[in-house]
Image 1 (cartoon, chains in turn purple, red):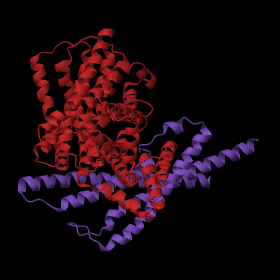
Image 2 (tube, rainbow over the protein chains, first blue to last red; image 1 turned 180 degrees about the horizontal axis):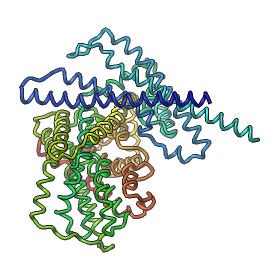
Image 3 (cartoon, chains in turn red, purple; image 1 turned 90 degrees about the vertical axis):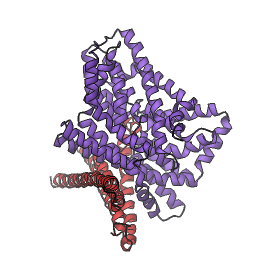
Image 4 (cartoon, chains in turn green, red; image 1 turned 45 degrees about the vertical axis):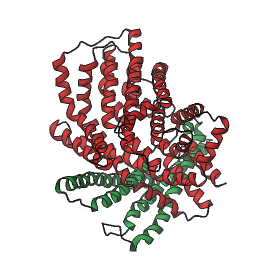
Length: 174
Length: 426
């Protein structure tokens, strides 16, 4: 009972994280369109190009890319070739899925650790035109790595737990 | 050994169903590690691969396409196409193809095309006695025009994957005739099948209706004119014209057509975010992957291999087409553009093929892959919209495949088809 409550609590927490990422990305997308509109207006109508727009846009796109792709892991929307795996018998399919999820979780963990290092390196360097630490460009990759690790890791734990539960149920029936 | 690690791990990841972007990232990280580079180089390359100014056009194009999809532009284009070409035999098929040509040209996305036009036209075609598989097949195959008719975000991905040096204006122009050719070929196939099945022609509504529907569709069509015209005239960069196109589409659908509700706007933003993230992370990871392919001289190795099979350019072009078609059947378009361009473009250059012609050939091949199983996202969406099983669509899709293949062969072997218009802005 407490195990299933813990799983549903974790599930809710992960859903919230994914939703928050999409919300943040959506806000970034709207800001991106708005500031680029301002850039075009400034350049062609006011004859005064707001030079900060290009740098801010590049920063926003990094946030959209990394936070959005972390949410994509939760929602399972990334492009992949799954027909070969889907054609396998069920036990093999579960093992293949488990390995794939573990690989993605591992990638997320390595990304988080490597980007943590990049984040620390970049704190003293400033982004041109924006005058903010270069680390802000690495931050979304750091967060994304952590979330990818959690989302894919939760799936691994879920699959293993289902497998153990299934085995113990089969043992009890025998 | 490093190359074996890179390709081996990537292939294993793909076989296991790991998302392609992460498969490339994992393989690149492993190869960098094997070569003694610090692991953070992989992620530095991924982040810098995403932070490229010309790539900013991609979210704008995707957002503009979503706004058009949810903002009523498609319905007006269908009304115009119906008035103009509906009166030929099997008229609704022609309407479908002509609408795809117009809408694909504006949205630049095959999936947006099917979702928008398929949901409007497939039910009407079924109601008028057209076979459901015919209706789905016409919609699915004609949607591929959106991949080559400008503006297409896939062209920007190709230009980036080619490592710069390819003019996006020229690519835009290069796609026009092949896109129209593809639609003409499909219209011929659809017409022949319409004669065979004795499908009806719609009554001609009169010139006044044609002009009225054209006037209603014109503001929507101007979106494409803004994007393509802005780039071609040199007034805007491709990124600026994408942003301007998105803002114009937003103002048009919200304040002129008044068909964009708040809910539709949120859906358009959220869908664009999801698609943008999916495409951009692919581009980032492919940047690291392609760096290693170049480091291991894969393009040179492959060119040498193909030249040992034959040094005849015609045979090599055929081999490239076959390889791209087969790859297109098992992997999605954006991923393949990013993987195949750095590998096959040097081969195309080696045999004297213009990079722009190669780009259009690549996009057409991979576009065909979008409507072939087992990984045919357009085919799947079309069948879902038409509510028919994939097997039913596949039984009768062959005439349309043949039409598209014929267009592909013409584009592959006659450079003038894709290079005449870009040649005009030399």
